[in-house]
Image (cartoon, rainbow, N blue to C red; front, side, top):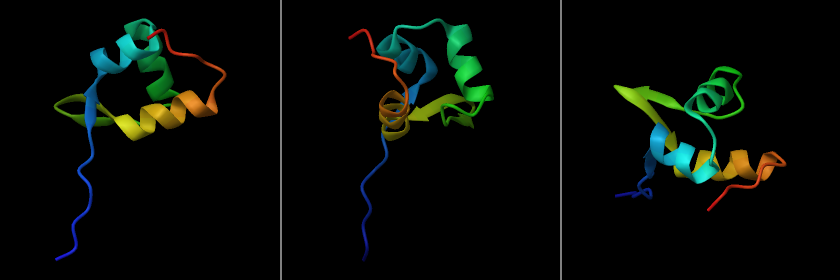
Length: 63
């Protein structure tokens, strides 16, 4: 049986806190296609997609 690693999803709020931006900015990134997100009841973002967003942009998260 082939096993794949389990994807870790972040809530919009968790991803927003990592980036240190407003909720409005998060929605803008999603709707502009800059940040991949999935609507599963609520918006969810794969941790891997968030890391790629950070690498692609000149943005530095406020951790």
